[in-house]
Amino acid sequence: MKKKGILNHQIMLAISTMGHTDSLVIADAGLPIPPEVVRIDLALVPGVPGFVETLKAVLGELQVEEAVVATEMKGKNPAVAGDVNRLLQGVKVQEVSHEQFKELTGKAVAVIRTGECTPYANVILRSGVLF
Image (tube, rainbow, N blue to C red):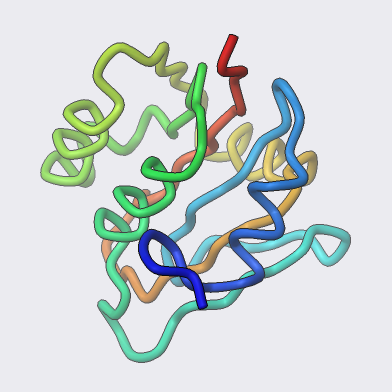
């Protein structure tokens, strides 16, 4: 049995098969997920698991070189925007409209759906390399 870090096998499979610039989405409970993208549904009840705790766990496993968030996050969910900026310190964070964000999810390896029920609590993480 794995001793630490993420125990969910679907998340670990997605991360372990990612190459440079592949993307993984961490989403709130309401983000539409394109049918062709793998859905890793963690949502249990509203708020569980939360977006921020899920992001922290994934960042412990995935080398991230760039991230994408919706421009609307700053104004509509400043607390989560602050957490994202703190957790992604040193990572280039690109802002796009929410509509563009939804289009970009179609290119992801997978979308991790959390139980987060606050607006615009979504991020696309682009994989980096260790060398």
